[in-house]
Image 1 (cartoon, rainbow over the protein chains, first blue to last red):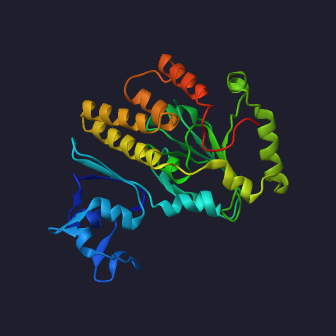
Image 2: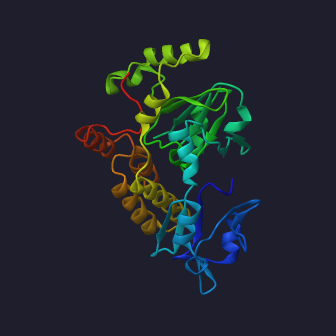
Image 3: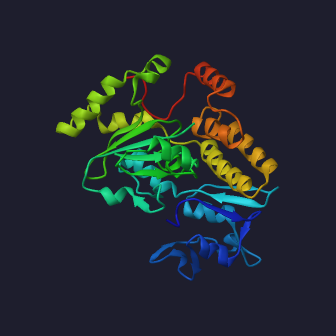
Amino acid sequence: MTNDTAIVESTGTLTEQQLIDIGWELRPEGLCQGDTCVIVPDRSALVVDGAVDLVVLADLLDRPAAIDSLSGLAAIGAHRARRRSALVDLVAPDFSLPDLDGGLTALSDHRSKKRLLVAFSSW
Amino acid sequence: MIAVAIDENTEAIRDFAEGITFPVLMDPDHLLTELYAISNVPTVVMIDENDRIVHPNWSAFGTDMFREFTGIDSDRQHDRVRAWVGDGRTELTDDEIRASVGDLSVDEEQARLRFRIANELRHRGDEQGAARNYTIAGELAPFDWTIRRAAMPLQGEDPFGAGFMALYDEAQAAGRPYHGITGY
């Protein structure tokens, strides 16, 4: 899912292509993903010298972002609305992850059934 | 049942998963710990047919091997799960569920992002950059085992060794913080 996590080469800004790579596009209506658009109240804060400011972008999308200047890598996290769904609405946020054979399985593939979700590890 | 390995060690997970028929999924970027505010494993979440969370993050163990170590009685947990599967009984109100997990702090969000940056740097061969970011992540979320303990094998440290015992003592001293319910 493009709205999961992303690692981008950035020390603070994104190119238009990088924005597209994480699933978003800047249009006259705002910041858009398919038919969904987020209003950009101050376009001059979001786009500076032709580049998209990562922190401003993250705030608009309500996603966390971190920048490691030394390596030139930044990370963007999931939309906070998904965790709010779990913690406030008590509706399980959907996700899609690979199984051991590389195929993708989504929580929603098993909807209409009771599910026991178990997070575990080898550590 | 859907098992999600908060782990990148596919071979170790494949060994665990031998003979298992329910989905076992890999989550090396720890997406689930962000979506469900998970701070340790194993964590169990009960989700009903309508996608409602009827029992939130639960520090549950499937075998009695851990009972002495943690004081958690797995028989009672099995009973609760059976009751739910059998007749939908869950014993928690919505308000109790909401009150029991607690959102991730900004630092805990940042820790997850730094952990992912560290993973990427390690994959690119930048061990120093990786170590720097694992350290930052650990400082941001010192009692999050999905950050501090998960990083141990990724840096050549035994997650069942002295580092783990030190982390356990720290967590004990801090009251064993956990995003969810423990201790049934």
